[in-house]
Image 1 (spheres, rainbow, N blue to C red):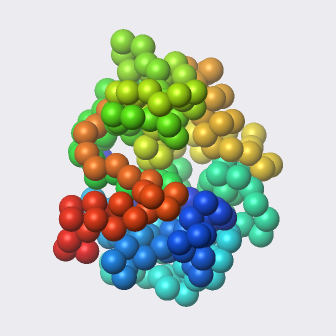
Image 2 (image 1 turned 90 degrees about the vertical axis):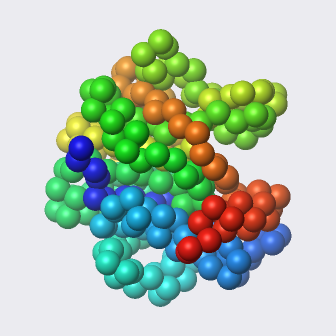
Length: 245
């Protein structure tokens, strides 16, 4: 199986909800037992074979850049800087344009810089080989869902809808903020998206309407550090699972 070697990480958000507990650094650099969350995330994906990381930075991005530099362990670190807020979609396509020559239209992984999901990467790649969809959303079931995009599927795991829950729904299949993205996205859509827009609310909706998106369903530890309660929980959950980091 061919595993992607490139990972783009969305790390430019303002992190306003987390500022009551972490206000001196950008959200992805929030410390988890004295180590930045982003460093733990990068370590995790280095273990999975990623060689090139593209950090999509904005708010307090200089903190991230000065911490990692251009090389971390045996991985290369690149930066795509938002001079103004572009939204998650704008940041993603801006990075594709900036690094077109390095990524060279290869398949890649896109990650939210504030979510953690320890799942079976080999299963994701195996699932990618069973479908021709342009984007595969890594998903998992949660017992109670008030915050995350809830995924509706057909019998072949093609995504019919991703919607915000209107109430706390049980056993929801959710979008974990991790995506396998084929090179066809770079060929077919790069020049169509240049303005500020949301990857989740605009681009994924378009791909659903075009029937070009499917799900890869996993079990594993999932957490989002975007709000104080879950950030405090992450200090226990992540280090317990990945104490070697």
